[in-house]
Length: 386
Image (tube, rainbow, N blue to C red):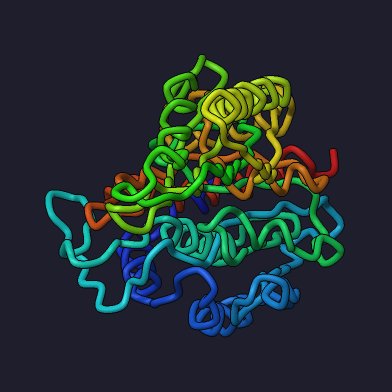
């Protein structure tokens, strides 16, 4: 058993750090992932992967489709395992200047770092390298590398699932330290209201005006927002309306979103918020029109499943403490599970993502590489011929 798991022990921290820094500097924000794909394709081809792209970009307007890569491993008859993450960043990383201080990797404060999720990409590459270099036995490995994840898991939604050959996998894409195992994720929907009052001039005919902003304010006073319960979150994020300070606004747009661990909780909160807008509009003489759009469905994986227990054992193999949890944050995990794959989200320890203060410790980065290698080895142990 020791020989099989030497791959995780053999992760080269310096090589992994260098790989991450190089990948982080590639400027490939959402919709512009081709630069990242152009770097990954020759790297993966050299490692023995066959590469294919789908045409998700034609549906979302990007310059690159989702990348699906396949390697037979040493035992191609075993069930395949996938590792997935996204190729985009939420903001550009052009001009990124990484700074390492006290064992933590930052940008210089003028860009994001892009650890979300270049750290996972670098870790996957290192894990597979050491699997190959040490001769550890493994089944087929598939990489599902999506585009346009940051604006709302869009690339995964339009992934050509007919091109995916594996059914089970892991996604490193959470701020928890390595060892975090997320078994449940939320249902989520966006909501838009167009609230109509009646426009008029404050100095000429104020008595004829119906202020749409006041209708929105009255509705918001009645809404339960923020942490509604342990199961449900709700937020109003954008309000747009008005033209001039002298004009009573006749229209205002309000938008927000709801997340809940249950479909019932999601629907009840949406209905509550819609009722607040409708009642406010009616009481003040206006009208309201609503549009609700599903973002993604929730998922829940049983903690007793062999798949989860394998992840727990893999964490033990590399000497990190595992813990099971759930999150109201969304990830490609939601969409892949909804489309018939089985996967869970794992922590890799990035912090302050989507900001210029984003950072990740070298320890978490290296442990992500070790954990990915250990997961591959555990998958083999679980499925090897008896």
